[in-house]
Structures are given as structure tokens and as C-alpha cells.
Image (cartoon, rainbow, N blue to C red; front, side, top):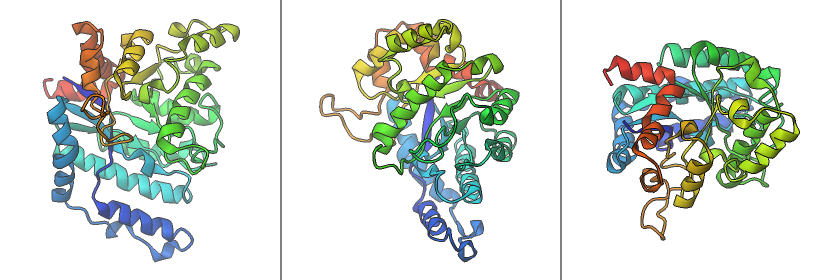
Length: 341
């Protein structure tokens, strides 16, 4: 199988965006709505948005299954309060669940959490539990910066995050470390904030002993790990100066990287520097970069082409395409085995 570990519902029906606009417009007057019951999206609408977009491209490009979560830039945890985020997360997660029910062979869910700046992350646990227990989701997206580009939260190694980690370990689910929209004009959302966050999350783990407290905790750092593979020598040297173990022992039992890197030299670097066992196939298609590369004539986010062209053995490609995802997302592996796959 070819498993894409990084997909977002970026093509949801416009009714979702309209409902969200009303929610944001009425933050100061929530009594004016909208009510959750006012959002009406039919199965036929969901089918149309998926068949004409994500599923069409999956079939064209040769992917089999996508781990599917709400649109990252729409999480916008900095907007409103916890109740705002809680309602919004529940709606978005339910839509991804419905997609997974309509297309069970092609999509399985990962949860958006109802994070809010300054609010105890433990408040997210009921939504996490619902998504795992009731929806069969296999992972979560964890935003290390709910403030939207101002970085008011403590690092991921801080004990405030531990209730989330305890639940992740209990359920054996990984977290993709994924920020949302930047409301700081100094940081472009997809070109700077996302990649900054990927690099920052890795460094927060490097300078801590988080994985001594949680030896089985698993993080997926998206977008190829931001600057991490390119500056691997810097991070090795910093770990050495901090008297930390070798990175392969300190972090690589717990941290994994996806292949949302949109040119061949980037994928070649990623797969040369980072052990293949720590690389998971992903495309984030119909996401941050949707155009066609004039140098190749193919979509930037058609990442399977880069894996095929990389200097990898057949076994290494299998690990990237399927084996690593089934190992990191153990609940996905169990769901597939239950179907005889």
C-alpha cells in the first residue's frame, strides 16, 4: 500500500466556511449564533468534494489511503476562547469522520484538538477520546503555538503538555506537530510559520529529556522537518554541546518526518540524512503548494514522483510508503489488519 500520512480536508463544502465566518463575526454576541444544528452538509456534498479532488488525485498519483484531518490553517486556535475552539473542532472532526465512513478504504481520521491560548491542554482530552473511541481516528494534530505566531505557550517539553502525552501513550497514537494560521504579519503562514514550527518543535525536544519521561511517545514533524535535515550537523553539534546522547538515541526512536517536500533535491537530502525508518510518505496535496512546477510539468505536491526517483532500494521505498506508517500509527495498522490488509 501507499499510505499518505498527511492529508487535510481543504476542499470542504463552502457551507463550513460560511458557518465559521458567522461564528467569528459573533464572538462578542454568541447568542446570535450560529448553532451547530444550522450547519447542513449532505453526504452527497461530501462525496462530490472528495471524489473530484483528493480521491481523484490519489487515484491518478497511485496513493491508496490518506490519514485525513481538518484543514490546518482553519484550526485558528487563537480565535475566540476554548468554547469557540471546542465547537469548531467538533464540527471539523465530525466531517472528517463522515468522509472516512463514506470512503473507508481510502481515508481514516486524525483529530484536530480544541486548543486555546492560555488554556490547560488537558481541556482537549474529551475531544481526543471521542475521536479515538467513537470515530476510530488513528492520530492527532498538536499545535505547539495556539497563539497563531506569537509563541506564548511553553515548549513541548513543559509539563503542561503532559496530560496530552499521557493520553497519547495510553491510546498509542502519534501527534503530528502542526501549527495553524499565523496572525503575526512577520511570519507567512505556510512559507515561514509552518517551517519555523517544525524546526522549533524538533529543537524543543532536543534540548529536553522529554522522551525519558515518555519513551513510547511519537511525534511526526511534517514538511520534511523544516530546517532539520538540512542542518543535521548543527543539531548533532548542539546535542553534543548540551551533553545529550547521539540524536539517533536521543530523538529518533520518537520523532519521525514526512515527505511534504516539493522538489527532488529536497527529498534526496531528506532520505540521505534522515534514516529511512524515520521517514513517512506524505503529500499534503491540495494544500500549501497547489501549482504545477514549470521545471517538471508536474504538480509540486505529487511527492510520489520524488520517492520513485530517489536513490532508494525497493525495501526502503516500502518502508516509506507503508511500513513506517503502520509502525508509527499502530491503530491504523490494526484497522488495516482487521480488513485483511
